[in-house]
Image (tube, rainbow, N blue to C red; front, side, top):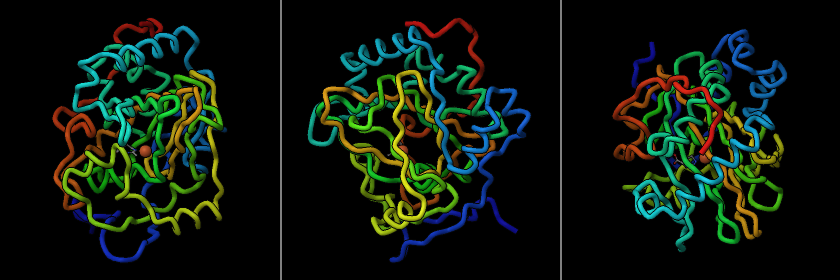
Length: 310
Ligand code: 6CS
Ligand code: FE
């Protein structure tokens, strides 16, 4: 009999990488609910098999224009850039990420509530959902730096106390994601195994990991073996696409030295029944801007269903 605090996914202990089996479904909801929310059957099958799926042309040009305008506004807004939720690129001043955009900015709250995201996440996870984390990753032209290979769930479980694999990320492409400007790379099928990481979590790890994550990342050998077996997919997409990926799908992205920013807005939907508890690792809880904890309530449909506009 499992107790509520049994840790099915222990990580960052011992000397050896372990490959543990996933003990949670990938698609939690009923197929008819996913279809009713706008999932196509081929997408459901792809998500189940690969741990991600890409929807093109979800948001139209005017909606993307509104998001791009607001992303640029926030990037030059002194209050936004001074906030704890603003993370600069390692060793530089360029803005790398702006967290908690769903809670601090009206436009992004509206995007997070949108049926094309929220309703589809709710159907996939088979429960009401809340935003565990949101962020705008700017990956600026010339200065955008890499995101090392990782499973988000490994961090959210170990450092935030997310019990099970019942969360999904939805990444809206605000600019063209080319092969050259540091697009998201994913390992198809990697969501089915949980690769434990080595090394103990440093104190206040988020102050380093959000700039460059070196703990809670699988070993190079494990990544090489996964890629050898499963391959590697680079997502190239026009603005307005949505990259939907399971919380445990291994992903990363290269730096960006091109003149073209690769800016994406990420919303992480977690099932209410999977709300974060105490961290499963030894570290202290992370701040609210990285992991919602203080007021966990289901995200609702937009009160104003008008198209997204600045
Ligand atoms: O620590 C986190 O929660 C963040 N780190 C990465 C590299 N991806 C997920 C999330 O943004
Ligand atoms: Fe990530």
